[in-house]
Image (cartoon, rainbow, N blue to C red; front, side, top):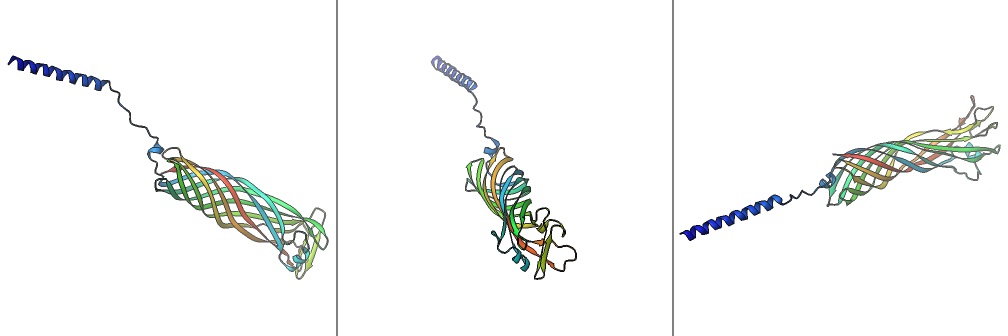
Length: 292
């Protein structure tokens, strides 16, 4: 009996010792912290809406063309080295800035499709001139033209690939609209004058008929066209992303008349030139989006 009791005592002591050692080792073991993930990486899904602001720079090249519009101007400008048409070319450039909003859908793990609309104020403008000769007097004159983009907007589709969970590279394209202001004149040098009337049409300019402007057109138009480009967008937090993109915007060709000047009492209809120009430009802009 004593032998059995002794075995029980020894077994209890061994179990207590093992338990104490295990408890001590557990107390000394460091606790492993959970892996940290940035907010953007933790919620990498791009599906959702956003609003934001943008700013950038635009540039382009403008060709303004003018052709005779009535029998009188057809005779007056016939035989010009660069006629028809009269052509004035100019570069255009300026700043732009505005707002955008859109919605993205993430699919197939690394692909994102979306739609975006934006509206920007702009000051993209340029002016140029070329020498011309008014026949029936062989007088030197200048054909000057300018164009200014006041504002524009787009509605575009986007399709992109996630180079990383937080970096989207995309192509984009769609509908564009905007306001363009065109201006074109034929002007005589100071001290010269000209007046020609035929076939019921006429124009007169310079002293003593009036000012030096022989023909002038100054239309403003709101036009629609297309846009296409590419860009990249980087998520910097769960809610914020920054982007950089390039777009080409084409608002189409606008046509207008350059009406001839006449002094009071002239029994003729004002002569005119038919002018036209394309409103197209490139832009690079950066943006900041808030995602929700």
